[in-house]
Length: 175
Image (cartoon, helix red, strand yellow):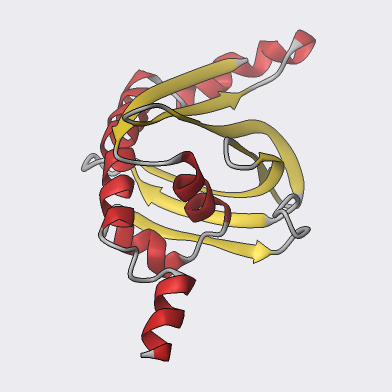
């Protein structure tokens, strides 16, 4: 099993706001968060009322080196407002690949833990070296750099009012 953890402290942010943004993604808001880097993130097929079982699609660049992270995933676990776990899918099959977002409030903001776990346990671990060919050191570095930039940017985007949020759109329609 290959694990990659990036932990970032973000000032003036809340777990609830980050959770709400990430659990109900739209491509328009995702692109507005980081134009040019974030390409697409939306719900393909809804799950239950808590978003458990949602199938999502995500597509983003990881820096200027042409590295790209694109996948379908299912929301495998939710703990409002502190955790979302997405399990990647390919051709309708769940893969041994998980993205976990842990959000913890602090007196100054939040701590975001972004973990990517790929691979197998037990005998299947013999396939991990092949996974490392793709998820190599430069890719891990690009992902880490991306995370350290994007989470403070999300806090700033949300502080500006997330002009694409349903609440903001509703308020502007009422005016």
